[in-house]
Image (cartoon, rainbow, N blue to C red; front, side):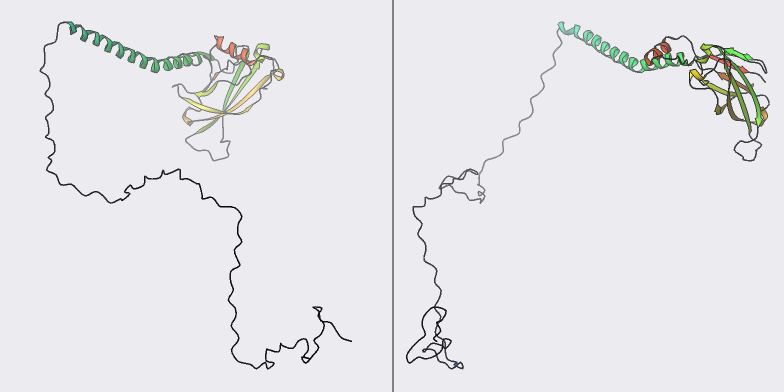
Length: 302
């Protein structure tokens, strides 16, 4: 059986009976051949493919910067200095001022008018400064005069007695106490305890449950010492403030030991009124129109 090679050609018949894998006759079969090899053909570029039609030249034009005119010399070489006998122009003196002439009689009225105008401007400036500076000061003085009158009305309360003011009854007691912070007592200070009891006498007194505007310890020479509130039993709600029920305010202060037995308590009751159901606008209106001032001071003797 004769086999057909893969390319489909029949096997060779004739004097050349070599197998399929044998080299061609023109090639020596000796693999030890060391002679020169035949020259390899040089690769050549593929033939160019002609493009149908005719290519038009580019039509793009330069827009910016504009093209320079043809034939113009674009050299950047500086021009050579030219020799000349030209002299600089002579300096001319400035024109002389015209001679002074005597003023005519008509302009003599100008200085008084200018003086009056200057005086008006100066007076307006001074008035503006006075208004800018004085108006706030006057308003501040009026506010201070309304809220803090220059002279207090002092009402002296005998020892151990109560006093009524603006539908509220006040009673005060004072005693010496040791240092509430637990520190050892010193010879330069004395702690004092103040207990003020307020009682609403009627419905008007119940809505006047605000804390006192001022509570101080004062000696006979007029010196004052500040106190701090430790406890206030007064209800903040008018509905809880019962008429006839005493509420305690406990305060402490420090004074020199030399005046601890004679210092007295002054209380400035607040004019605050907590009207139930009152709007903020009505509250501000009543506060502005009210003629009541915090000028009443209660001084409790010892």
